[in-house]
Image (cartoon, rainbow, N blue to C red):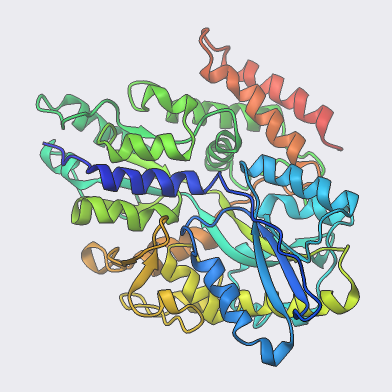
Length: 466
């Protein structure tokens, strides 16, 4: 029988999931005459919770005020990622917000750079650039110039319930990096055919397919898996795909998300809903981000499995950039702050807290605890919970058969991840994908794959140059 999820654990999972898309206003603090000058950092909500790792790193910078003469303040923006983007665009275009540093989603860099809202960065803003994972660092550039430095990365992973597979007599209960979508369908069939299904079980897997960015992410993962070297745009943001490629991608996406394999409600699920469905035992598999690993392990311990997503996985994450509105003097200090927040020690702290670190060096000691000197709450076996309380880190790095979560799952997933379209018009592109692919998940019988692809090709051709 499936282990029941405690109310406290479910609350923890829900808070963690919601933290990726919600936030609260930070009150403005007047700068007194005797106060040191401030560097204001605007960011979305920290998924590691109140007084989480980002604030801890800001505090570590402030503790060195005597060295640089500045203090930093973190402002968390409310709302979803799309709402945060709109807020930042409006604030920076009007010049009404005193933001010196902005923490931007990797897909926003071309748009903010092309609009002149962030400035090119010199080498002072990044320490040891060769240490940054190459695929991750590419998200920092536009038009041949560096505009940002990777802060925390993200990539899709596959979580699964070992007890579901074992009790169903499935061919395997420990999944390695070679697992395919065909393997998943076979394993789901085994669970579906088990006459004594787990309590609460409904369908094989769940993901995020509601009409928001999650649908775009799942689509790009399917398209890139179906078409070698798939890209919607070239390095200059021009449209490069064609109907045949899109048809193959739509077919792959439809096959992945068809009944009886996918939970029906997934077509309307975001991070929180898909996480809850998995946590309640209603599915055996879940596509989600790295930050949920510690909380899921807290609930299911060794019955939880995690591995690389079959096929291609999409790269996510946030990068730090300096705004064009800030003065030259403050920009120089802002670059120093970015260098501190993204240095090797900070990245080890981010990895320890549950984020995907952007530097290869953070993954060099699998099986052990990455050293974290900057953030005291994360230095001695503790991490921040969404309530702001400390909790012992229990999610292990060592998995079955000597596999390391950080070295063998997370690092290669990041290194081989694919990017979403690189274009200043990304907002229009993702809205087009969300809208046109919605035909697959409507109440009426969807049109054929070729027709969906044709409609998508025509819509993208109107949105993008080329």
